[in-house]
Image (cartoon, rainbow, N blue to C red):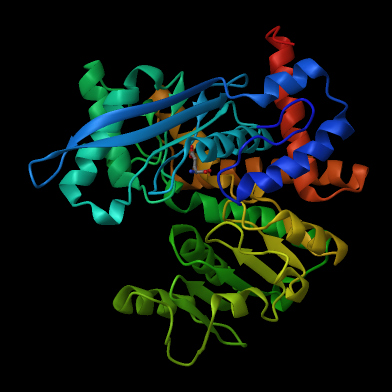
Length: 424
Ligand code: GLU
């Protein structure tokens, strides 16, 4: 990650850790970290790259590459998703594992951070090939994961069906039931109620606290959401149910806008029937770029990284940005928003609801005690609001941006755990 003289090591692409890195460079100076602390934060604890054979439908064997990085586990077992992506690199996985360590510490749940994945385009695999690739990856890393070592979950292009195969493969290897080894499972296999929409709902809880701070009233809050995958669609649905005015949404094919508000249940139906939100009757088609700069009060990037950048940030008109995607804002755009007094709720806080309910799932599995949805939601709300207040008070105290105070809260907690363990 960052060397002690703050020199950046190789970063394979221009997304998230550019932001994390430059923010951290400032922070390391502000926090006055010692050489030992910098050294400790500089490297992941464990990094695995595995190569494993998968029998394809043609009958031929193909070798696959998988990675898993356990960045820090001072506060508890490492925790983080598994993504299937054709451009996945070990450096990218390291960056994401580092962000997971910060996210779990910001939410103050007893986990460290990890991330992993398989280098593959899952859309190019049949159902059987996908299952064989998942099982092959788990066989290759089975010795290094487990409920008290490192707990996987869904991430980009993986879902509860894949989590079910992960559980099954692991249990075959161990010869016993171990539901707590993976989260984001189907409810029938020990998954938690509300896990499927917890990232979006956790973001809304935080958003509502932030709105109070800037005196933004629900009735006057017009919202635009970029991305209509699991997170974006659930955010739109939940906001609509809470009587917010969602005026614009988009997916990879484009977006739609209706200045006096979209009827989201009908947009979801239209998307399910046609494959996209575009051409929704009564709305106007717009591009993703137009969505980001449309006249709204709250902008929610819930798609890819680097969407808000130096080119479009000066034209963003919202008062508040809620990062439900990972790293949707570049450092340049972050600076522009700070100067324009736009409040930005950073990803490590805004989208932590997913891993928070993962923690509840793990805990339910270990205690063999399953909670009603109401209990999950109550505990999620409490955890998210506490995290928001921790970050917000530091931000007020230090007059800095929320991203910086979130990183600061997280690093202090991680370093404290390291000290107590005698590692510093
Ligand atoms: N992949 C999600 C994230 O990046 C969830 C991780 C988890 O639940 O462990 O936050």
